Figure 1 (cartoon, one colour):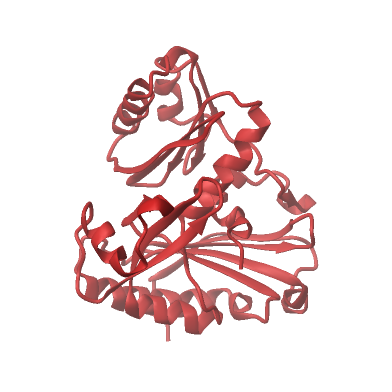
Figure 2 (spheres, helix red, strand yellow):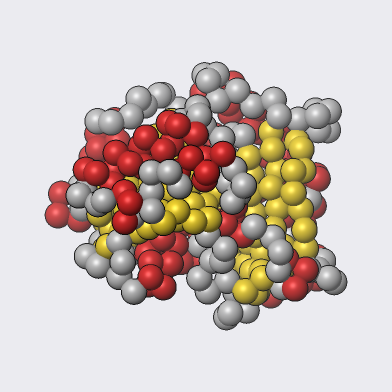
Length: 299
């Protein structure tokens, strides 16, 4: 039974006629975290988007200990599958990613699989009960090492029937690389914004130059980090192309303030290689950017 008020359906929209019967020929993409589960359903070689959803855990306490987070997520996941029963349907393919704070990129030249815990603990506080995994990125050629509570990994693997789990920054980087091709090699800073976290991905003709994650409590914090990264890489903010995705709209105060310092800020209006059905044509797909790029992560 779901705890009253724990799982909130913030957003759910499907194309006309979508139902359980379509799952067998479609793919499910999910990015799950303690606070939110976002998902998309894609169909066909042209990745026609049939459904988008955003569920929130309104009793989550990210500052709580690992055991408390695991208990909260367990109830949240049960509530998500009860609120949207077809999430656990017989999809043809499933990509599942974990939205955790701990990840780091390591080049193949120094990667030793048996030392991945040490790579991650160098810059992140690790706890007993966490498992360290890694994704292999094609562009750039690197390993993305990340941690996830082992009990949560088991829940996701069991609920969705998947053997592997990705980190959300893997499709975020892959999507930014794919989108960058549309800008004819011009340097671009991609900013993925959630309620308290900012991911920045800087790409130029040479490929990925920078990725890191920052805690933000106000728009001014996010703008400070954006300008700092641009300046560190010798990019004139007045000439910079900054592309925003996540929990942001054109009318947000952050966009207005950013325009005073950055010459070319914009909110992403489409995702490369994704074709929303007509019922989703007006949806802000940038809010599902990592979810909609999970298909780029391989099997």
